[in-house]
Amino acid sequence: MDKHPSLDIVESHGSELSGKKIVLCVTGSVAAYKAIELARLLMRHGANVNCVASDAVTRLIQPDYFKWATGNPVITKLTGKMEHVALADYKKSDCIIVYPGTANTLGKLANGIDDTVISTVLTVGFGAKIPIIMALAMHQAMYENLAVMRNIEFLKNKVEFIEPQVIEGKAKIVKPEEILNYVLDKFGRSSVLYGKKILITGGPTMEPIDTVRVLTNQSSGKTGVLLAKEMISAGGKVTLVYGPGTEKPPKGARIIPVNTVHQMFDAVKKELGRKKFDIVILSAAPADYTTIPVKSKIKSDKTSLIIKLQKAPKIIDSIKKLQKGVFLVGFKAETDISKQKLVESAKRKMKESDSDIIVANDIGTRYQKNPELNHVIILDKSGKITDSGRKNKADICKFIRKQIEKNLV
Image (tube, rainbow, N blue to C red; front, side, top):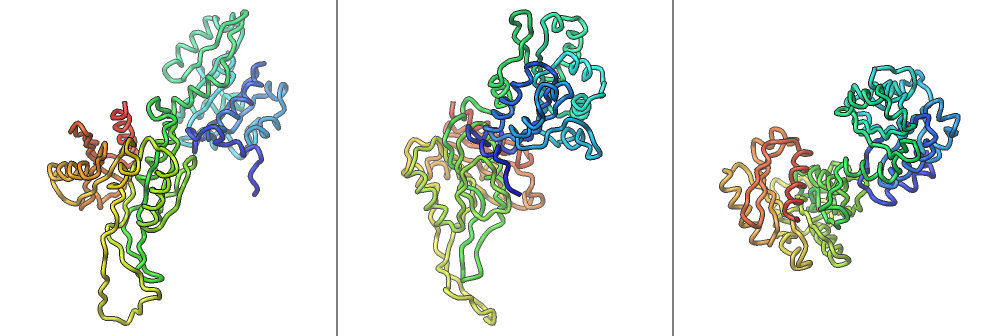
């Protein structure tokens, strides 16, 4: 199926919302036309937007306009497809935005009434604890009505309200750009990392032995991919040099696929030579040793085989020589050692590579029992050691990001 032409704008202004599914509920206010612009802004920063339009809105704006804007079908009624569940059930979407939000829709949400397509979507999303952002718009007297104020008070710790601007006797909706900025901040845009050029390596490498066999390791590439996603969400401009991992690389990053450690090193050198980066994160697991491959398949009838290995280049040791001022994040993995020895190993690594922080972990017996969990320590140049505790890899990567931010300030 061909891509809808409207999707050509996706990520044209940034990739902070890459992979985010946003439901845009448009209610019957004359400000509804501004929702078209909001949908396009969200898409330009990477979001996938699905519009839900009330009956009143369809009398103001043709539904095809929303389909043109987002490239997705517009929900105007509920059918046997259970659109409200598909959009707003547990983890189905990342956020629901009501723009504009009328007193009527506010009242229905506050009192559990779901007699319209939008109120039903909101009821499901509210129960599923999907974040709801409501940008209010109504006449000033309606906004100051005690019942409306009571509904806002009841929902204020459960729904995120964007307060209107009271102008000319009307509580006017804020501009689409303000909603965009609110959403970008909500999903992790960082004042420290925003706009930073970030080079990340991830995944394993495969070193050929002959035309069909390779030396490799068990790295899935998940940490590198998750770190890239974190940096994209923070507003960073990410380049990922990615070995043959099993994790799908993220949208919103420039991906440079490689296979061998020499290809990875060459790609890193080329990138550092072509532009200035602010941060380099070396989370890949490249080979420590390589061999000169045989130019044909080695016969399997041999009772034994000797393969001579040569030491592979250490990519981390060249980074500061290629770009002196770059903030360098190195990784150090050991197996089945004490925390004290892990810290000592991280200190040696930091000194050898002139890294700004080292992320060290033990990938021995305990880690291998459940590779979805990890436990890292982070050493910075002041000698401070920060312990993550045992967490899933997504939370570990959030922890690493916070430590990078703290050390950059």
